[in-house]
Length: 237
Length: 217
Image (cartoon, rainbow over all chains, first blue to last red; front, side, top):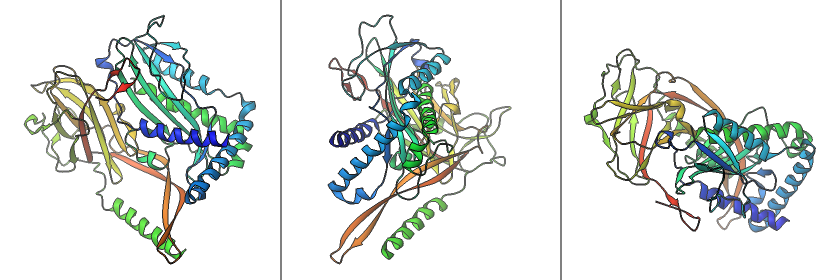
């Protein structure tokens, strides 16, 4: 399990690096034919991340990295166990907010169930979708809690939401962007991602405090996810 | 340990100098004499090429516009590239010190008549910059970027997490050890008439291929 976690972290880092490409803006004026959007089942990780963005382990080479991966796995295991009774569903949180925002803007929204071989955009979109849609909205979500690291910085909710709108008729990319809630480190000055500062009401000074208050912790994650997908909706305004 | 404190102090001093060297945000231009219509002859030409933005510094000396019955605003005009292929335009307002130019956009035709407007609320923060993107329509020849007097003076505050690295000498052989730590700051930025505008015209990505891969332009 530790090796898997190290691989997942490495994959996430590589994926995020790739997603920091220049955004493709959407212009509703030139896409007036897009009236019905099919939201394909978003991509999510196995569970929320609980990340310490800087640590002693980073100074200690491979051994430090392995120790850090083990500590992260432990934090995430504790957090997952603590929030289990809260019946939190990342899919319900994201889809209900996204559907509401798009319908508010006059789109007709359909859900398009899809399975994914990996945590990334789909390589192909359905060609036999019924009822028909004008475009597919594909969203890849990573979420959880992050602390900037050693230096008395609390854990705050964080979300990375990559989004892509693809025209159903010709697979042209109408919009592609990345939204980061609570950007830490280089993501705070990254001009390629839309950034949302965290709500100061949700902060936990230590991992022990985070797992001791699962109700508030889940509320913080829900707010972060809602604000992030709401911003995805704004990109299609 | 003493070396680490010296390095940290030097870094802090340099960071502080970078912020304080910048002029304060320009919030009032009431004393400026302004034109009623924009000067299209001063338009900056855009090139349709990825990563080739045109940057303009907006400050007290920048051209000023005051349409009849409206408030003053600073502005710059850009001429869109002529192209038979569709492309996207991206307008970025970069922070300058503690302020950021508060843009809104007008698309004009060849005669300077307004074709459409893109309001300030279309601009979203990306780090400490404001950015909006869109796709030009046929007949749109000029892009006018102007400061929005309705939002100048508004402040946006937010917590930003940082990761820091300090290099500490180890031993006597010139070795270094890197110490990583985290910190938080509260970033406050004021929308202003001044700042730096960057406009780029980019080709659109190709459609996702038959193999299912998105291809770059």
